[in-house]
Amino acid sequence: MKPKALISPPPLKKGDKVGIVSLSSVLDEKRLLEGKEIIENDLGFEAVYSKNILNVHHNFAGTDEEKILAFQEMLDNPEIKGIIAGRGGYGASKIIDKVNWETFKQNPKWLVGFSDLTVVHQKLQSFGIQSIHGPMMVTLKDDKKSTTSLKNALTGKNLKYKEKGHHFNREGECQGQVVGGNLCLLAHNIGSTSDISFDNKILFLEDVGEFLYNIDRMMVQLRRAGKLKNLAGLIVGQFSDLKETTVPFGKTAFEIIEEHVSEFSYPVTYDFPIGHENENRAIRCGEIMKLEVLKDMVKLSSI
Image (cartoon, rainbow, N blue to C red; front, side):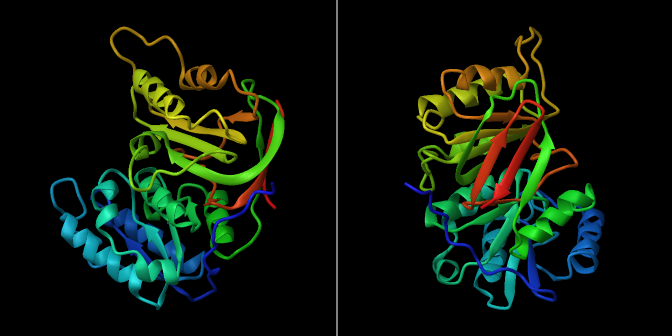
């Protein structure tokens, strides 16, 4: 059966208003302004801040109530054609089930982010709507190629990535909906109201700042929940700033993941530029893409 894409929100046009939201941790004003300059001068959109954009409540960008109200306004405002998160951190999962999504489901718009925003992507995919895993306001200046990829994703252009291979790569090709995000959030999403099937899909994973034993524990969770056995393919992104315990775990993140998918036959690529490094290619979650994996090269393309 030919894979079917999720609903794609309308592409953005030059001059469209883009809402900038703060759903997770406290946002740094300097980096916010740097991102705003890129949104307006390089991407060609008008940035509109949510009411809580620089709020502070302990580590969070305001109280849960402040974040919900500000996000709700952006979702429901017909003048806002897309929404980009300021940053990740922690907090989106605390409010995701308290948002009223009815207007959004009738008139979907692109939502952009990564890391903690994985919970938002999973929620939208549970509705059957695409969203964009890609650079946020505080990372837009990190890599021009990745920022260009975000503009292409927002404006409806085909995405075509050709990246270097890795000696762990398991060769092959496949097609399917591309889904995924931060490994920690994907594991935490299992059993929630927005839990989705990964069967026959191309899953991508990334993470940052975790202990290696916890990477193993989260991969065990995915495997035990049946999330790995029926994939079309797997894209292992960047696993950054990982930590060891006093007694070393004994394996790298890639070795841990390789062990957990060794019994399966689908193509797997490692060290793809998705995650918390400077290079972070935009992916339209829910889009049908083709993955071609070789030892020395990987291609990921819109169909």
